[in-house]
Amino acid sequence: MSIFHYALGLDIGTESIGWAILQNNAEGEPIRIQDLGVRVFDKAELPKTGESLAVSRREARSTRRRLRRHRHRLERIRYLLERYGIMSRIEIAELYAKGSFTTSPYQLRAEALDRPLTREETVRVFIHLAQRRGYRSNSIAEDAKDEKDTGKIKIAIAENKACMMKHGYRTVGEMIYKDQRYWQKNPDGTRYHQTRNKPGDYRFIVERASVVEEIRKIFDAQRRFKVPWMTEELEQAYLAIFESQRSFDEGPGGSSPFSGRIAEKVGKCAFEPEEPRAAKATYTFEYFKLLQDLNHLRLIEKGMPPRALDDKQRETLKNAAMQSSSLSFGQLRKLLALNGDTYFNNLSYDDKSQEEAEKKTWPQMQAYHKLRVSLNKVSENAIQTLTVQQLNEIGTILTIYKNDDSRMAALREAGIPEI
Image 1 (cartoon, rainbow, N blue to C red):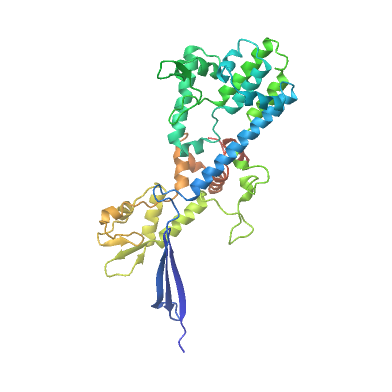
Image 2: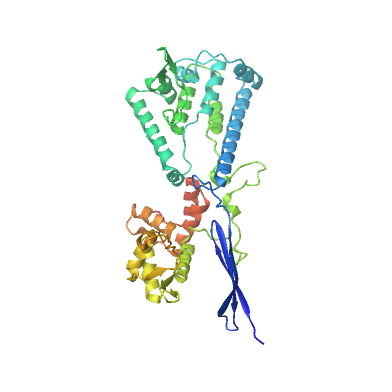
């Protein structure tokens, strides 16, 4: 009686899943294709941009959270003003409902350095400052991901600093109110004060530290003018609310199912249920993937079955991958000294010349090389002083934590040496 075994093979891609059932003999060797097929579906991304379908949902969620936190901050400011007897929340609501203000908040912020403010003016200045807190980065690394906008922001901040030094403005509020860069002309020739950025216009972006400095100067000036409610206690309470900002590592607050520290939400390994999953940026995972990809790589020659790399070829490509993160398959061909009739199994040569098809990159050890390049800027060959365990710790920390302060604290706790 013949005994047959069957094997299921899957080719899982972003737009299709190919499958085949092979009939094997008792020795496990395939003897025939029992069945095969493919299921094609739409790629899970936006056709025009190639972005994930989750991007729009994530951006909308981020906007909702930002607006919610903005409203909550202003509500806390109103409670604070009421608690210190400056104006009740009902009176504040009536003040803004009535509107028809004859002076802009920027004018009041500038004048607060040279004259005492009334209660109504104090309310307007404090609420306006809480609405225009200035730019503060959570992470240098996260900024680098969006260098296009971040670069423009940094340029605008530098220009505003230079403007303040050149003209001797005492605060950013005074600069924005008095400097001609923030005034525009109507078609009839009259001038008006522009009060916020427009698309592509970053003139109003200043550092949060500069706004904090302005708040301290306003409090100091108002105390010199003997304004009774401008106490040091109120200053500290106001700045505590003004500077509060939830860390990216903590996630949303309240009853959100995503609340809590991200570091505590790492899942467990499917094969080692008691161990947490490894981050993709760890050295051990990347090295495992490199070896796995080398073992899966096959060379195909016309009229010959696919063959795996020999030990010498694996070692050659492994050493090359440890030196560069962006090798192309054309470079792999040169490193292995392959003839023109030999092809790589994981490339499609249909309707393409061999040279064109082999321009595709073979990305390996991406996180390792980013770390190596960054450390080399500080000290040459610095990465060689780190152990595999330390490289794993660094990869895990940089993946889990998004805030620079959290990352630095975690790196110190892990015993990573400073370079």
